[in-house]
Image 1 (cartoon, helix red, strand yellow):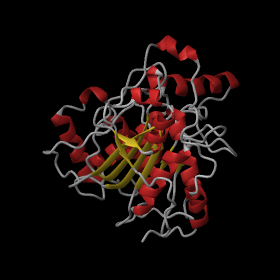
Image 2: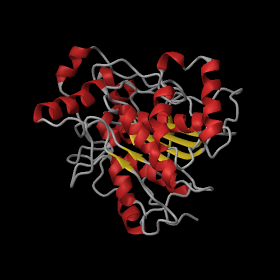
Image 3: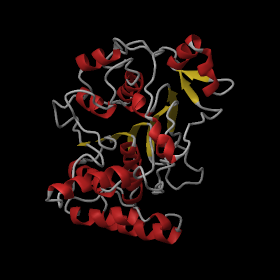
Image 4: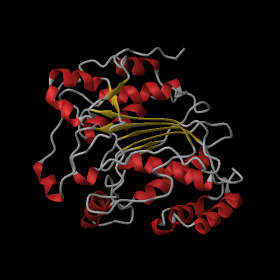
Length: 351
């Protein structure tokens, strides 16, 4: 499941890491692996927008207010219900607001499981119930959802586990001018076996505040035991981590390789030549300049990120600090670096 960010889509060039990972997948045998791609909110106009002005307004509603987020979530969930077979491993990837949609999809699978085929007409109602923000702390409300899941889900009590969640720089504001979302099971992903989250150090736009992942509460019912969660911080702004910028130092190749390596180790099927080409990191300069966003974003207020003291910092950042010691001021006093062998190409298939 590949869910792209706001106003992102598959292009001939300048693709996000979601698209680049999608293009790396081995889809030669549908009995082994299939893929779904969603271009994200604000990319296309609503199907109900017939006139040119209506189509423009529809696109900007997605960009500024996140219109279409529920529809994207429902379409992704519908694809799973129509293709899932018992024993399948679900991998979910996303960037930006697509990363939030990926987490919401994982939450929807936590609440409802996977609907039986033939229940497609009920999916919009399930999404609407799930996304009622003011009610997600009400235990009686969730009990009602679980009864709904028992009736319509192939998993008797919902709780469909997700094998791998791979996300680049999650933001949870629905749109540039809207408040942050609070959909259930997006801060914690209790039914995801493995979670990998790449986070940007240098983003400063207020609407792009990071939405970090937390471990499930110890008393969470039926949560995955020993969840494997890694949240790693990378140099660059939002789209240096998630892709889009083609020219320059190609910083986005570094979190792409990290994510692909982690997913392949857990069973993702890729095309060997494409994977090897990506793993070579040809032309990548971890010490090069990251992109700088226009100053008009400052009109929305300050948004420079603070890296938590316990954060895991990708080892490529150490090279940047060695070249520019002043950059170290953005990091914790004692940085905890990980992935020292990040340049090393990984064999495929993994041993």
